[in-house]
Each structure stands twice: as C-alpha cells, then as structure tokens.
Amino acid sequence: MKTYLITGGAGFVGSHFVRILHGAEKDALIINVDKLTYSGSMDNFKSIKSSKRHVFYRADICRQEILEKLYERHKPDIVVNFAAESHVDRSIDSSRKFIRTNVEGLRGMLDLSLKHGVESFIQISTDEVYGPLSEGSFSENACLNPRNPYAASKAAGDLLALSYKHTHDLPVVVTRSANNFGENQHREKLVPKIIENELELKKIPIYGDGRQVREWIYVKDHCGALLELIKNFKPGEIYNITSGFEMENIELAKMLIKMTAKGLNGSDSRAKEINEGLLDFVEDRKGHDFRYSIRGDKLRNDTGWKPAYDFEKAIEKTVDWHLSLDRRNGD
Image 1 (cartoon, rainbow, N blue to C red):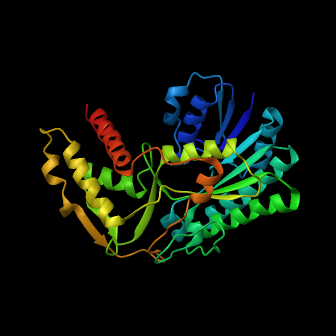
Image 2: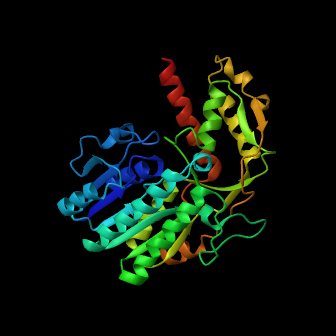
Image 3: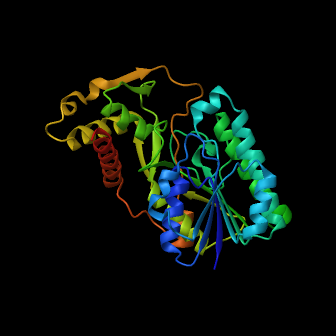
C-alpha cells in the first residue's frame, strides 16, 4: 500500500485531488494535512468522510515539529504539496504570510522528505512565475519573471525544491498550471466571484478594461494530469499543465452572465436583472500582468495526458454547481 501525504489538501485544487486520488487508488492511504484557513473546508470531504483510507490532520506546514511526527508515524511514499497562500491581491496588501508558507513552509517539508526518504515529491506551482508576455507561450525552460509577491514566493519555492534534487538527489517534480476553475472554489477567485455576485445582484468588479488574457483549465483536468505525472515520475523535471484555452477576462465575465441568467428557473426574477449592466470597471490593480500563456506539449509527450473536458462544458458544470448551491441555500 502506497501512502500519500497531501498538504493543503482541504483547499480548492487539493481537495479535488484527494477525492480523485481516493477513487483512483483503491489501496492507497491518504494523509491529508491542511491548516483550514478561510479557503479550506472539511465540507469538501463529505463523500469520503467514513473512509479509513483518508486520514485528516489540521496542521500548519510551517510547524515542522508537527510534520515531523506525521512523517515518522505514516512514512509517506509520495508527497504532493498544494499548501500555499495563493491570492495575488492579498499578497500585494501584505507579503509576509506568502513568504512564510510558500518558501519557509516548503523548506521544512523538503528537509523532512529528504530525511525520511520519500519516493516522490511534487511541488504544485503556477504559470504566474513566468510573468507576462504579449504573444507566444512559455515553455518550462523559460526564465522566471514574477511580477507580484505571490508569484515571487512561488518562484522562490520552485527554485528551492529543484535545488534539493540537484544538491541532495531528492526526487522532486515541479508543476505549473494555468488558472484553475470548478466546483468548490473560494469566491475570492475570478470565476466564483463573478457567479456569486450575479446571484446576489451585486456589481461585478472588472480590473481596468478587462482585456487581460488568462489561460484556463478545469480543476479535474489538472488533477488528472497530476495522477499521470505520479505514474510517469521523472525527478528534476518541470511540467506546465494547461488546456491551451485563453480568454479575455471581460469575455469570460460576459459568458458567465449569459450562462447564469439562462440557468435560473423561469420564475426567478433575477434572470432578467443578471446582465452586463452589473459589470463595474474599477481601477486596475498594481502590477497587473496583461497575459499569461504556457505550453503543455512536454507533459503530453511524457505522459500521454490531455484534457478530458471541453472548456465551455466545464464552465457550464461550474455554473450549474453554483446554481444548485443557490437553490439549496434558498430552501
């Protein structure tokens, strides 16, 4: 039986991965560690609540003495680190927590993984470490050019993780994904913020003119790619994870407005009020990068993985989830 240590496993992407891993690896033991800050929730594990193959610990990865006990008790074979402070706006307001978790917390995990001889360590990162570009797409060999404190802390973590491979031969892989979306995402992120503001008939803040371009991947596709990487693990490698689908923020907002209004029951008066009049163009944030774009051919060539979900259908599934939650809350 393989033992997985998943840190940050109660957050958005981490909790999806835990559930998908639980279903895919029938004989695996999953040790799930999360600090349970505002963005993590135990509600994400209702479907596996009674499982003996999923063990949850509420803990901060920066508390190395606690992690030491978990490593000694469970002797993990595979470590996947989702734990991170990840909201750009919050990092602009104050970067201290970002450096603490995304660099120092990671450092402690790398030391413990080296000490206890883990077979595989996957560091979950972001495409934002590459910085912006006006055309083309970044490969894994591109120079790093982070432009906000969040991205800088993740870039520092990536370099630190890779240094443990080259210095200590710790089997590390770094993954950098495009923007994720899907069910259970915290509303500070763009897609859920737009949908929830619509349903509450609140203004939808759009930075600048909304022409910033982002690449999007459905969270379940991201998790599927991670499973393939675990099967085809190559220490010291970096992998971009992307669907290759790009869209301007303003066009995404307009798409979500149409889908949400269409998805409401005919008797719901909000259907007519959810329209582009809710869009509120606000002052652009500091250091806002115009466009991110990454190439994913290395991952596809090495593992054979490709996205399973069409972007528009995945967005529809996400909207339907929010509408279902809205109906339950309204009962």
